[in-house]
Length: 131
Length: 433
Image (cartoon, rainbow over all chains, first blue to last red; front, side, top):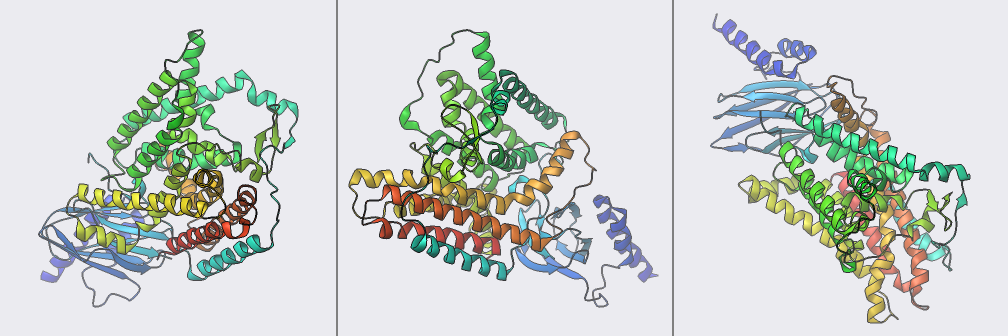
């Protein structure tokens, strides 16, 4: 019962995040991959962790490699609201809430260097080199 | 959301991949080989001369290009496009989907260079301020301009304008802010219009940053006008020499080259960490970035001027004139570097901008270059190399003409070293550090 609740919560959370990316393809992949269980995560996924505490984000300016269309997951633990911008083509925007371990998933379709930025803090969390 | 995201270049989307290490090494090797070959083996007598006429095109080409109808039509089109952009900027969505930043940072800044490179100094024909000025002169016969443009100002106002542009793009607190772009453009229009009404068309040709940039890029165009005014196909190396040497010429080129280099530099994690750890607010960060941008521009201006003047056998006066006399050799380097940096922007963000202007935000963008990273990397190294080779050749030929006999070999060594330095730095920055 508890597991179902958690799972539904996770699905809702991911669906809520991806709804702003306006791509149905994204949404299906987000629901297919339960984002919170990283133990069983296949190595094919790229995970970026970031913590926001007292107006500081750590770590910042991470350098990450990913392949085209490879799922990228950003796990945020935050004590404040913020907005996560993924400067890919097309762009993704996720709302960060004051919660621990929220996950946002996306995949980049076009090769290039993609900045993941916390909008309110004005910090670049990571630059993903997508090849 | 009232403000847009803080974006590199004020535009969203991803940036180019770094060029692979092997490409950088191949580029560096060719740079050295070409430079040594040019200095050691190339011609011993100057070949290029701005007075060599080009091969004239049929008369009707000149007639059509110079016809008042053509000029008025293109001018009116420029004015209409400006109005369209203004309407789209004000009535469009006030967020990152707005067309204005794309028009400003892509079509104007990069598109103008491409257009001028292929067609000649187009800004003087399409500039909305020029068209307004022409209208004023037509409607009020015998209009006089109250003040002559001061000769010693030279290109300094244009250099300041170009710096203001790159500052907004690379060092201001929020390059993507619609308000900031609007304010910038309003100030530009006000200053250029006031100057044009005060000093006439000379203000446009000397002080309008875009007209000066367009003129500089057009020195590499394959066209020129012969002395009789006919449009001709010409060797760009002859045409490069027709760059007017005025106060501020070297500074304008230093702003263009230094800012492009700073653009890649500021994407490096080392720099970003430095800015993040040493600043707390956005204006703090902007101040540090401004200092960095200035440092790049000053470094280019100083190294180039010193290298141009580093020769024996000239008096004080002659030495002071040398940087200006060599300045045209920087143009190919600037253009090559601009294309290496901003070609994807022009092709891909350009499509988005055109779609945004049409109001069709969902239209598909073809990521022609990004989808083929190795083609893109080859193109980038190719542009940098081509610019370098052309710059070295132009500098060598000019050195033979302006350096005193007996110092022509040693006198150009410093310049060659500096140019190799620019190219290596460029490749290093494109390689991603």
